[in-house]
Length: 288
Image (cartoon, rainbow, N blue to C red; front, side, top):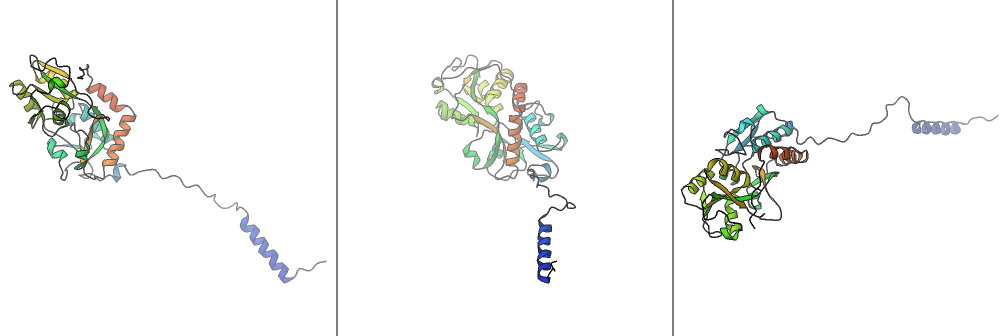
């Protein structure tokens, strides 16, 4: 018969404790895996808006068709009004939580503090403008076009070269204005504060034609001119298509979230459906 010594008993006790420590404990709650944390950075409560509790959106006055209807951005009608409300919904704002303000085009793209969260006003995304403002992802791919009246010297032109000696005009500060000099090569283009002024100049015979984006060209020739004619679309100026983007204050905390909203609307097909609804076109000649 073996007698258990004190040192032997201590060793067995340590061994038993070690085995107990390594064994699973039935009465303990199993450890749960850490759930991945959802990206909540663009949830409404995390957004730093210009006014608490609302989303402030800007556009010009007048707001032209087909981008807006009846110069009333609040009715949700017209491509840009519809896109703006869709972005707001993606950000968690209901329609009655959207506030519209009127801001002239040049004030939007020039440097300076912006008193809105974002602006939609057919503003093309350019690297030069990125020095002064932020842009969201593009929400519309745009082409520039030349319009005139029946009987004009440029009616029937089929090439860009045929327009080089024409007297053309566009709204100041726009890519339409830049297209006159950079793509057409016309010198001394006429600059107007608004497209309405350009239309009146064409009616008065002060210019031969106007350069505008294609949807606006359809509206002007169908509604604002008695004998309006679309001469043709200009070729794409760059490898990348010209796009309209929402304009935000430089380094705005909302830029990434507005871009995510636009990207979602493009991916889920809503932008295409809104183009079909508000900007459906019958085609226009291509200028070579």
